Image 1 (cartoon, helix red, strand yellow):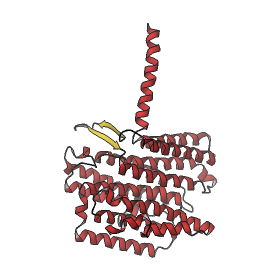
Image 2 (cartoon, helix red, strand yellow):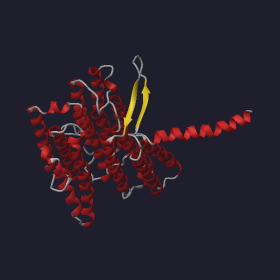
Image 3 (cartoon, one colour):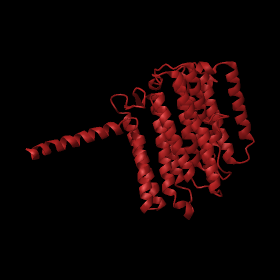
Image 4 (tube, one colour):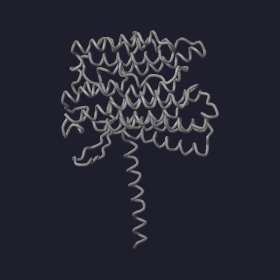
Length: 401
């Protein structure tokens, strides 16, 4: 009888495991889980196989697997969600909630596109013998940053976004610590890491403080249809400005050295986290924070910040700082367009975010193509998209401005 029971329970247990795995991986956290598994696999592979070509191929394989899971989410019969209870001490349980709806799904696609491009372009970098030993750690950190970004932009409530923010910042700090600096020293690395920790993690602290006026039910309020007090919305705006790197909250985006432009670093350490900030702006506007930004003093400060960003880009002493301030200015324009849009929420910032992601990415890559092969068409298209020229995504954001 025991043997018959085991023979029947074996297939049942196997079916349960397969169903559970399918439920987890075909959920909003599925692509991030694939990337995190890839990050762990790269760390293990780096112990016995330090061939850069093999490690890069493994990185690309997990990136493609995450993209495949992302595409599979689109074919689910219902909106994919994932929820697990979180029980802090002396408080009632609150669900950690991820949802892959239209805005979350779209921004996730932009992050995967830019992140995959950053990983592909990192393949062309020449590593010294000392840097090659850290190649596995760097590629693992790349996947961790992408995973943290995806966990953040698929968050369905304030508590989930707060915890994902902390994880993303830790991944960015980890990548800053293992990224080789051409001509730099370890002191430069530690100084830059400390700066990023102080400035970027301040946004998570603002979100945490914002939970206090929201009350006991505030952390569980969904972004799509929740209600939060003005104090919480104001702190969410400040946190989003930090995450998006809007001037003057851009200090954590400043380059570590005056070396030549590193496309992979700009795409992974700059554009992907800034997209997370624009995503948070979209939901914050949806909750009613756009009205807080429509007062003349706030709009004047935004205009002055954009002017200061333009002056900083114009007077930059090297290409790397010039590119950084151009992207900072583009993110600021996206925020201003979302605030002035007659349609509140993600629809109001949709085209400006698209212009930042696609135009900024094409401009960065096109600049390198121009310098290497003399082809000016890609960088011209990227610059036109950032400027809002006709027949580009930026042009569709012009009516708000």
